[in-house]
Image 1 (cartoon, rainbow, N blue to C red):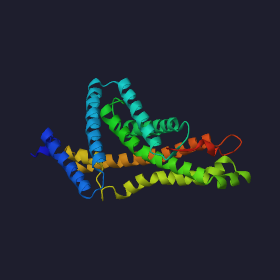
Image 2: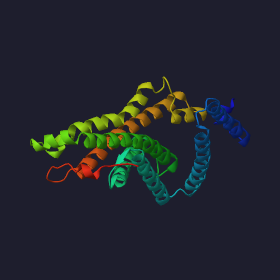
Image 3: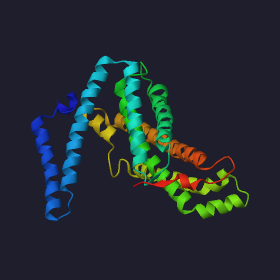
Image 4: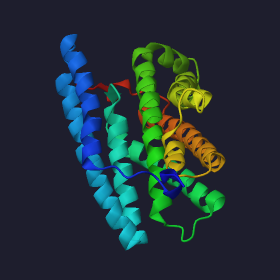
Length: 269
């Protein structure tokens, strides 16, 4: 019986040190080619270690306590962090954008995650953190990228194409009619990463969840079925998120008299 039949092979700190040597190779390449990336690479590596160790410690405590209230608090904290990251990546913003991103991620993330855990997987009790936390994490991680791309493109179109939008409004178009084209393009832009990922999954790359289950010794076909569910969940959450953030932004940037308030859009410093 192989080690994988007992589960994943445990890694020691010596193994982690050897893995860190791979990053040193990347740093050496940066120095040799004078790319100037070695400092950023070192900081990113340090943050990766610190953040993941902290997450591991927190998750160990959450799993041990097994409390619904503690779980919901952690999910809320994850959503807040994701909303700041989503808006922070956009080159343009407006007052209240972070709250709109939070509301979007909260609604779409919770809806898709608990649909999977409740209706598809059927976990008992519903708040089992071993399922809920990883699934919501994958949803938020992918959705925030789509939301950021959609919001950035929408604000760019409404700002740079302000005259076109205002001309349509002058000729009798409602705010939703004038915003339809920019909104549609923004949603398409936000969906590009997840669609590209779905097009090559299993051919070019093996997703993290599937890889982790295989390393734990799970049947590859069972791991594949879980990964299919996850990909569909991410696609649904991203599409809903891109649409909702666009609708909320348009509702804020157009007043009740169907006028575009482009002055509310500001370039991020």
